[in-house]
Figure 1 (cartoon, rainbow, N blue to C red):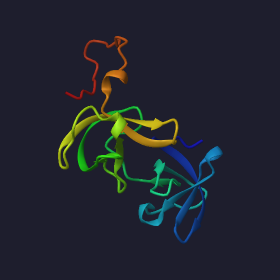
Figure 2: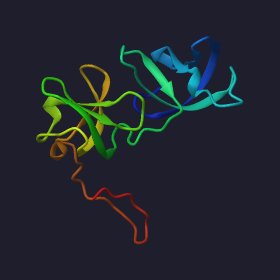
Figure 3: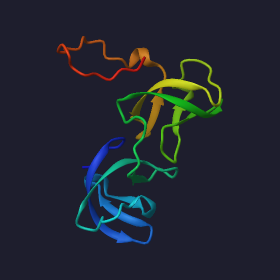
Length: 154
C-alpha cells in the first residue's frame, strides 16, 4: 500500500504516454510522470518513489526527495504568502508545501524561513505543514545510548 508523504517501494504496472503507472494498493494506480523515470526502469519492476498530491488532488509519485516527509521537522524557505490561505514553502519538490493560516505561529515574509512539521491533514487528506510546534512535539523522554548518532534541528 502506498503511504502518502513517504518514500514507497512500488511495483510498476504499465507504461503510458504520461509516464509509468504504479501499484498504489487500495489507493489505486499512481502516476510517475515520464521526467522522473530512471534509466532501466520497466513494467514489472519496483521503484523507490515519494507519493504526494498534485495541484488537482490526484496522487502522483516522484523520484525526487523532499526536504522533509510526513512526521518530520524542517527549516523551510517561504516562497509566497496569501493572507487567506497561508504560506507556500519550498520543500524541494515542484509543488510547494502549504502552511495553512491556522497552522502559522506568527507573521511570515516571502524569502523568510520557518521551522515546521509536515503532516497529513485528516480533513483534506493533503500533505501540509504546521509551525505550531508546541502541540506537535513528543515530550516523552527519548532513550539514547552513549555515542549514538542523532539528527538535530537547532
